[in-house]
Amino acid sequence: MLEIIGILGGGAMGRGIAQVALQNNKSVIVYDVMPNAAEIITNHLTVTFDLLIGKAKITNDQKNEYLANLKIVDSMQKLADCDLIIEAIIEDLQLKKTVFEGLSKVLKSSAIVCSNTSSFSITAIASAYKDPSRCLGLHFFNPAPVMPLVEIISAYQTDPLLVEQLKAEMTNWKKTPVVAKDTPGFIVNRIARPFYSEALRIYEENLATKEDIDLAIKQIGGFKMEPLS
Image (cartoon, rainbow, N blue to C red):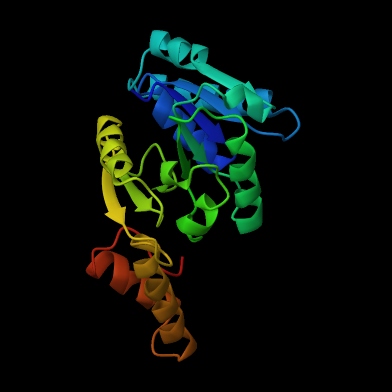
């Protein structure tokens, strides 16, 4: 069972993933080295849960339970008991590899170690970990509490059984998991990049105004978001 979830990075993605895990009754440990991390992350989640109470989506008792299950730490060693690690730091390949190397020294052998990267090779990141067969990509979309899709990406070295385990876990988290190969952009970003670049090209070639491109894509084409707004 994946009961203790460790999250590296307390930015927008890290906080969002933490919220999802907490609302699925997991114990969550967030590791972040920014000054006043504990206060900033806890305050952000408190405000978020208060908004959900106002919308009658959770109760005050649930909010208190979620916050009681949250711990913010400034030492990687305090992640030692985690069953699942989700790295959600800035998109810097060398930094991610350094983090995975550091995790090698503290995590138990049964831990599953994931990166939330949207672009870097999972195989490359996993190569820095002591047992790369325990590593995968687990790509949430922003905002993580709202967006249902999660991409699961195997590294070249990944144990295939972990893919099925994560699919089941994400389904339990009320997410929609899809499995992608370790290729640039995975699924969504590989589709999205031409979506945005073609819209820009149409605009640059004066084939249509920005407003008409957005109108065609969202209101007529049925897409949720405009490419240029």
